[in-house]
Length: 410
Ligand SMILES: *Cc1c(COP(=O)(O)O)cnc(C)c1O
Image (tube, rainbow, N blue to C red; front, side, top):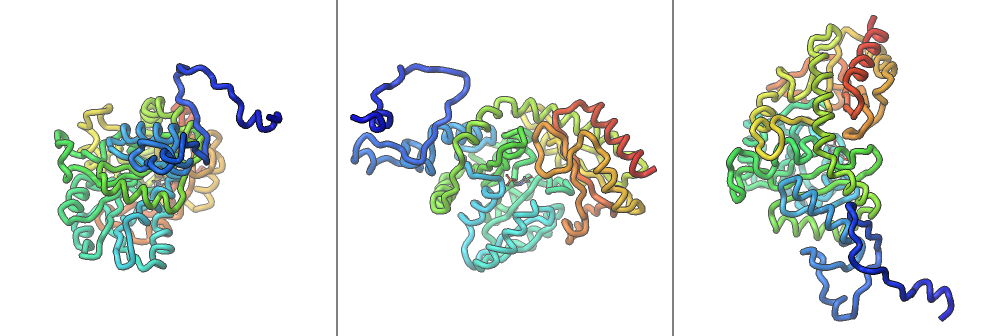
């Protein structure tokens, strides 16, 4: 045997029994079968075997099981980003002639997908007011197949009556899908929303969740990944088959990075939550600010819904919230002043995403992100700025905001 062949087919096998705290990274496109019979009979869909890297490795199966545990689900499927998770749900469940309902404060790229590719495939959509159960109920028809929910909505942070929305969908026989990036499986259990509800009670939760693991699960601002979770076997099978047909595998090193971050997720979430609340509450009566949008801050749209949902969540500490909030600067201030405020911050960097160690700030154009305002929870008019709170010291962050305010508005 020449050396090249020898290197590829080397006889050495390390001893078994290696144990270390961190689960190993299994790298594979090709998976080797013991023989042809094993190749023909191995099944990946129920995670009893391995057939090809795209269909799962010990590393991705392990991450999926741990995420299902955090989320209160039975099944989990990894995908390359949070947006890919949204797309996978849409493409798995919708066909020509179906209608999908999305809240007016939906994550922007989901709206773009619904208006773009889904519309091209003959799938229609309607936008509902997440703060009005009647509005949602009036839009559910025979053609409605899927209802998207966010708790709270992106950027404007209105917290809907999630329990009633999930019940309504269940009563009407339409599939409910929650973008649970904000709750992260820590603030509430999306599959068991009511206190004391039995595991089997289908009216007590949503049918599917997605998460952008890019945010808290990764925790580093350095990995893109998403997942789709459910408790229903038939939905999981649909998701898995579409996942296979679209080829939405994730990189082994990325899966490993998320596995490594998961044990600290709850501690990070709580620490970042505490800092975010200190900052949000400190800005409530600020003379330049018309409104603070943070579900845990009294007076924020849907605060009571957040309180009712999270305060008795038995698994985790009561009343958790993600470390992200927005403020609306008064309309008499100019956009140039608000931009100057963002530019003058030292610790808040300008950039998208959240859940990482570094605090971030982004100004948004309220009229373009919320073209259909809610009648039920009107927002103040003005200039919206979103803060994502990292792991820095709250005193340093607050001092930074105050120096920015003084510089931009005085
Ligand atoms: C970031 C985000 C996503 C998308 O996640 P990516 O991994 O960036 O694609 C989806 N939903 C919400 C609510 C998000 O904040």
